[in-house]
Each structure stands twice: as structure tokens, then as C-alpha cells.
Image 1 (cartoon, rainbow, N blue to C red):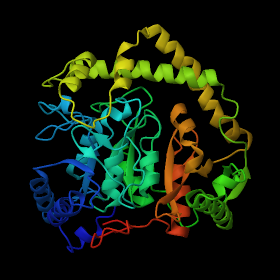
Image 2 (cartoon, one colour):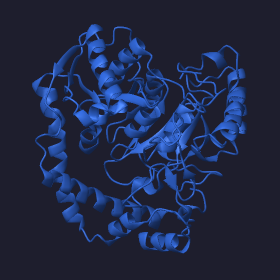
Image 3 (cartoon, rainbow, N blue to C red):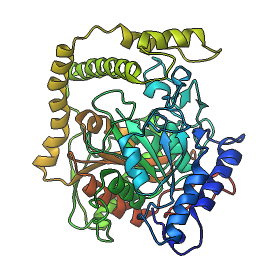
Image 4 (cartoon, rainbow, N blue to C red):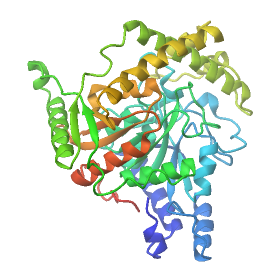
Amino acid sequence: MSSDMTQRGAVTSETLVSDALKSIANIDQGLQGGNAFIQVNPDAREAAKRLDQERAAGHVRGVLHGVPIALKDVFETSGKMQTSAGSRALVGAPPKKNARVVDSLLKAGVVILGKTNMTELSNFRSEIPVDGWSSRGGQTLNPHRLGGQVAGSSSGSAVAVAQGHVPLALGVETNGSVIAPAAFNGVFGLKTTVGLVSTEGVMTSSRMDTVGTFTRNVSDAAQALNAMTQTNAYTAGLRPDALQGKRIGYTPLPELSPEEARDPALRSDRQHFEDAIRLLESKGAEMVPILTLGVNVSLEAYKNYDDALFADVKQSLQGYLAGREGLPVKSLSQLIAFNERNKRPGEPDQDFLKMINSLETTDEQREALWEAVIPVFRQTLDQPLTEHKLDAIVSSFRSDSYYFAAAAGYPGISVPSGMDDEGMPTALHVTGAGNSEATLLSIAYGYEQATQAIRAPAFIPGVPFRPHSL
């Protein structure tokens, strides 16, 4: 996320923030906009002015100095913005302090432009969820094709980056909530290893939740991860020869059925994946075919994972509501009752939330479930990585390989691979062992530089789309 232009005096942070706020008002909130933002920061311009004054005085904090970013509506921020997980029931007094990761980014010099919309309560409200919908923010839309899948739950953050309003937005993933919105909205989505980035002050759903980023290029994702971890560990591998000598596993795609072959999206996705394998090999990577991920995972393991996850959701939400001051609800039961009293025509049900609230899983049972299932999903990735001495595994996003990385607590990155015949983005998913973010970013960078596959939304005229930083 280069600040070269601000360093050269070509543009100020205040100008960037003002332009972004105008584009949100004119594009995002317009008739064809994506409705990515649930709230803008009323203090953003003042923050940008202060950072410009710092720069003028010779104090530059780093490459993120003065850069406007957005946060999913689960990251606590003190001041005038809400942190509500998209729920009207959680609108009250703002938090008293920032999430730890927000403080890390502010220390690096970012400007918080606003909070982004999301699937309400991180997709744990309705049994038939509407991705990108929340009672507070309404419906977020895919900027590439009206009516296209937007995915959840970090929908707004992906769309905010895809529409060009910010170069960086944060999300949180339990299982696919960063990778899927990034893939469907055509941006880079990095899901970090569980525990790598602090979730203190983040409204999480389970112990498997982890912070992720949405960007328009790999370098920005690496710079952001440096700032969030307060290290310089993630940019060194972004080199022109990044793919040389890498051993990358992949799962050959099965032949399409006659019915699937008539689907232009599936045909495009398959072609882009096969092209990607050839390109990675041509750039020096050794491509190793492996078995489909998850073939040895039992149905019982999937069920146990769900049971453990839902029990965690209850414990996490109950604890958060009880401990957060200034909210109109203090428990799941009160939250459900609030939604019943204030339900509007056409809103999704809250049957999923009611089911979670009814659970009577003990802490001992919950811990036992996690102890049983996490090793199963880790082995799903560890086995091919170790057996074939792989640096990473690449697959088509549509293969749902991101599920296994999420259930294992391992990192992954969604990488744009082109556009299908219906005007929707296609994507690769790259994953690896725990804490292998530097390697995954290096591989993604090599592919990105060779393809330049990312595309701006076609139907939003006049939006400045800068694939390579500010």
C-alpha cells in the first residue's frame, strides 16, 4: 500500500479521504452502488489533516501513513462509530476503546474511513441466510453484476475494496467469511492463521475466528499484515522470481458432467484453473497432483465440528453481550426478543440464532469436541503437505478447499484468476500450513505479477480503480 504519491506531494491524505467519502456518497450509496458501508467516520477528515501535518513536519510512520481503510462492523472503535455486527439490537453506546489490531493500524498511520456492512451476526442469525444482508445496513450488492453472489459474512469489506473506495479493508473469518467474499467480488482476500493477529476487541463468533484483509494487490496485503503483527516478515518474499523452486500441490479437476458443461461459469472457472496450473509451472514452480482434500474426513467429524462451532458461538455471543456496556440487549434471549419486536416485512428469520440459544452443551463437552475435530482437519492438509514436501496447495475456489483451511485454523488467500462468461470473477485458493502466510503471499505475488487478472467492476463508470496501490 504505497504512500509514494503522498511522499512526492502529489496527493494528501485529506484529499484521498475526501475523494473516498465523495465516491461512497455518489457510488456506493447510489442507485447502482454496492451498499458496502454501514457507517462513515465523521472524524476521518480531521484524522487525515493531522497525518498530513505530521508528514509536513517530517514524521512519516511508514507506507500506511495517511491511507484510508475500512473495518468490518465487528472491530471495536472508540469515538462516534458503532460496532454492531450489522444488528439494530446492538446499536447503543460506542465501545470505550479500540480493538488491539485497530490500534496497531492506527499506530502505522491509517485513517479509519468507516465501518462496512456484513451478513448480520456473522451469518449466525438465519437458517437460510441472505449473504450481505443486515438489519442495520440492508443488502450489500456485488459490484460486478447486479444480482451476483456477494458472499458473506465480510461482504461489505470486499465490496468496498472492489469498488475502489479504499485500498484495504479488514474482515473476520470463521469459515469462508473472508475467502468467499474476496472470490465473488474479485479482490485479494487473505485469511490469517488463527491466533496470528490479535482478536482482542473484535466481536468474534468462535475460537476459529481470525482477522483477514481485502486488497487489490498482494503487496498491500503483505504491508497490512506487517502492520497488524508489528513485524516486517511478510514483504521480503514478494520478488519477481517468487515462484522459482516452489513445490505446489493441486487437485486435478474432475470432468464436467453434461449438465455442468452447459454452465458458462463452471466452464470459465475450470479453464482459468487449468491455465493457472500451466502458468505457475512456466514460472518455475513444481506442480504436484494430490488427492482431493477431505476425502478421508468422516461425516461424524463434520457433525462434531458444527456442534463445537455452534456451542462456541453461543458462549462467545453471550459473553460479548454481557460484557459490552451501553447496548440495549445483554443476552441472546434479549437479542432474539428485540428482533421479534422490531422485525420488518421481508426480513430473514432468526431460527439459527434461536437454535444456538437453545443449546445446552457444557464447557467440558465443547472442549472435548474441539480436541477431537481440530486434529482431523489439520491432518487433511498436513498429510499432503508433508508427504509431498509442499510449500502450498492451490485449488479452484469452487472446490471449497477453504473450508478445510478454516477448520484447521490455517491461512489461505483468495487470488483473482479472471472473469467468467457471465461477468463474475473467478479465483484460486492458496493454502498451506499454520503460519505460512509469507510463503502464500510470495506464491500469490508471483501469480499476480504474471497474470494481472484482477478487473475493476465494469458497470461503475468513473470510479478510479488503482490495482497497484495509491
